[in-house]
Length: 95
Image (tube, rainbow, N blue to C red; front, side, top):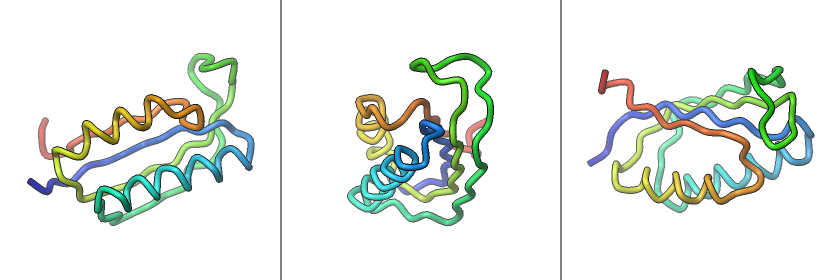
């Protein structure tokens, strides 16, 4: 079942690592036929707490249409990636 999702991801503040992480995210979305409706680069921000020895992270926000079954698999892929510091999928329709 296709639903709307909001996805926020935090990459290392290093420009090359951010670029590589963004390529991973977009290629994963393409693999699972995710439709990107909006992409917003929120820039580098100071993290609330240190993640993997990083004090700053590069935030990117997406609005997506994705199959609910693919979200679990994408969660697993992003958890295993060293390029992604943190991420969160949210279904805005389920509150």
